[in-house]
Length: 157
Image (cartoon, rainbow, N blue to C red; front, side, top):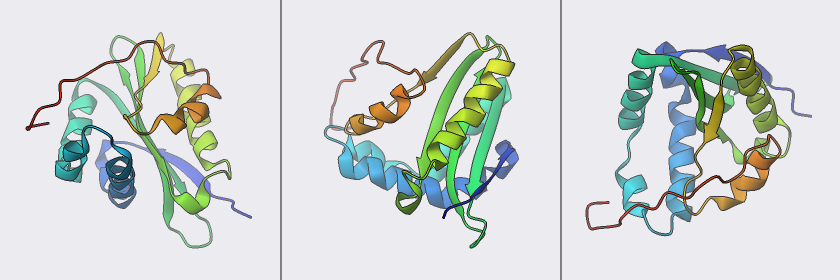
């Protein structure tokens, strides 16, 4: 039985998610239909800088799940709350062997409760092209497609 422990930290601990984020990037790379070059070029340092930029203008949270037995981090959710009270699920990932065990749901519940308590007006999550199967997970929490954003693909994308 999986009994992870959960805790919340901030931008100073972004390195804790590095290995998990690399797995997420590879997950997207394998599924990308149009923008695989984006994931091939994406590095954790780039994403870390993006997260730090968010922290400079709003609040950034890292919720972590750690396996009590091994002590390894097995999942994370990076979320933000802007000064305008908009909440965003910036990045979420759970290792394959811990999926369908409630880890992702526990992370989402923590994040959404925090957003509710902070009076967030709008909550959003972006789903990468090719990862549409994640939609059923997000619908459990009331997230539905509102619009699709199309991006021009060129040799530099």
